[in-house]
Length: 229
Length: 388
Figure 1 (cartoon, rainbow over the protein chains, first blue to last red):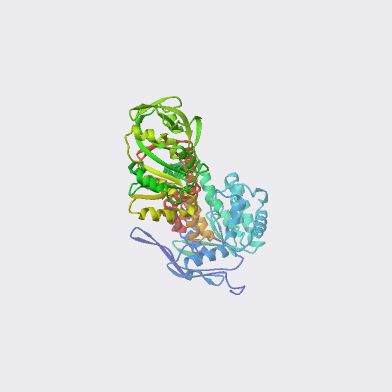
Figure 2 (figure 1 turned 90 degrees about the vertical axis):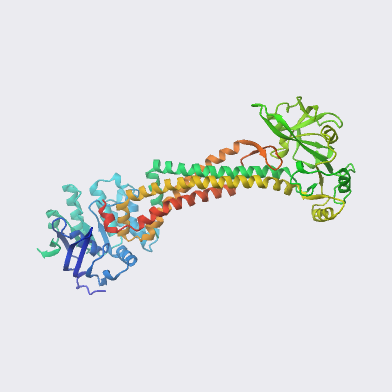
């Protein structure tokens, strides 16, 4: 374990490029970036600047060409695919632009999904799910299917799913991108609460300056390189 | 723990029309599969029930059926004197020297001719077949041109009903009784006095000798003795064995026919399942990416989709078996190739056929779902999530 004061995310010389046909397109080149525990970081930048790629790499769902990503002391670039899946299950919570709830499962079952990867008993899972659904204010909508919920409610279920295993890091890709102003505001308040009350580290990709305002730190990506704000 | 089964089940339910159509395609194949097995089973049950374990059939050596057999009077007398033959309450041996002749009768519907077994019997013949009872009328009188007809003959053949007259062996025979032989092959026979029959058909030899064993365990000794006796050119079989042998070739033919048909049809059904499952995977790319991001392993995705395909197959199997179970209401009559005579029997559904059919449907589901499931499990997470 890293010491409490050490950064939770340490990125060194990170590079990633994509193939488009025979062409190699560099997306990230030599990124160095630290995030302290409990910080709320917004990644901004024009489309194609590599911010989502950076977020995916930190979340362990994409692999880098070069460089190192240490998260809470674990060098995730060295993990095998199935180790990485296990690591994600315990350490990262995902919040997506389009919520990505499973339509055939109820709100309760959607939130319970990540817990199925733990050794918790059914009763313990129920306690966890009910607790996080009350945090997001949807304890009374447990048996609703995603199609029976509004966009803002769906995103709150998704947030409950992201925090139910109590991961240290939450990654959010345009979490307010599909929401109206009022719902977006609610979601941002909720994320703010997660950072302050539950001491989560949140890394958020956004185009929305009002969303970015909530963050402690805003980093801009331009042509694969970071600049501080 | 993996992805819950309810995920697979509810996805099938969500697109229930597609599920139903695909499952119906598989169900049709399972129906054909189950129906042919039921046919073979029904045939075999009918023929095997025709025989009784304690009865022995004596035929000429190498004769496969009574029609091909001939046992001379002298040899018949020798068999009758064997100690294994049971004696009835009247002191006479429980033994019948019978004649089997095939004749041609016209069916009631369509006037089409078909082969029918005429059996010359004596008074003991009925005692040897406890499954048979006279339903209407009376037994033929000895020495008269009277016959009794099996229920299935009475129903389906011209002149076979009670009080009607049949013409064969250059004589007219009055049907004085109709007997019910349950689902056995005797239902498709006509019985009359053996001596009258031998005269009418100008036969010198009996076709077969049937007797009850005094003691069931005495069969092997009897068989060894008479088959080793140089004066005799006969062989002995338990009656159950005899009828089983008769049904074997036809049942085998039906089973092979059924298997070939279903294998050909199942290719179509499997392709249908594959297309359905590929569509299911294509519609749920983002879901798959999400599940993988949440930490579910490739094998969890694989098994969730395989489970879905297995359930789809099982739905098809249940539709097919459900449909096939109605076939039990149908009675089929066909040529029994072993005796060249008309035989009526039903489709018989057994537990064995049910589970074989369901297994078959599940295997179809598995084969159909395998490739799509592998594709789902191999998806790149980032690309899958981008498919939103």
